[in-house]
Image 1 (cartoon, rainbow, N blue to C red):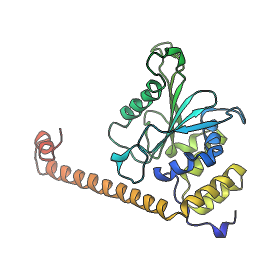
Image 2: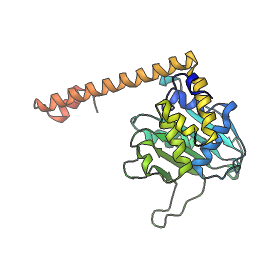
Image 3: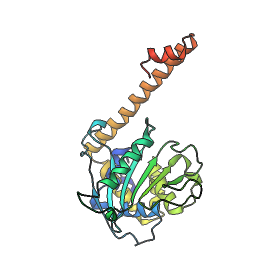
Image 4: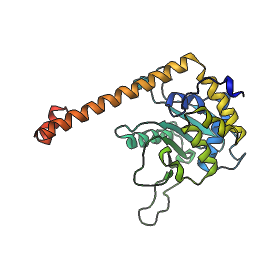
Length: 260
């Protein structure tokens, strides 16, 4: 890998690039390394993964075409869903729970016994304060008994990785992966490549995807979509504030804005 020959590296925090990086069969050793860091597997413990996707294949950035997540079955039978969330969206927790439930139900065919179910785990990388209730970078959710806090079973688990709280993470292996995902400057990527050979390959793969014109088009379109959405939200907030400051009651202001 030659630093001078690298194209401008596209940010892995943008979901179209995140999925290319971690959802490609050719480079699944990177995904195995990342999953192992999140779930605490030792080197070599997770032997293999196989990708699958129950959503429509995404060829554009139109949200109506599907969800940009990564689904994989691990060599131990566990089902994993990985998703990059760069921005907060309404009811995001409900949506994550809904899709995770499908990781269980889609495992069984008609007449299959429940004993066939394998644990389904979601990994959410968030570039905003997704879990404001906690100062932790890595929060893990299970179905627990309310007072004694033992799990109902081992079938459901959600891991949330908050990039905004990266400094609070003690897991060095996982911290390096999250630093890679969070990197924006070439120097940051190259510093990680000097720490661990896995990041030498990760940078090479990212450079390959970054040099592709179609990928860059999707990337730029995604950024434009985010900017447009933010502009609409900011405009709506300014309009609401103006109505309230002019003395319009909240209920009437919400009605004027078309809000429930």
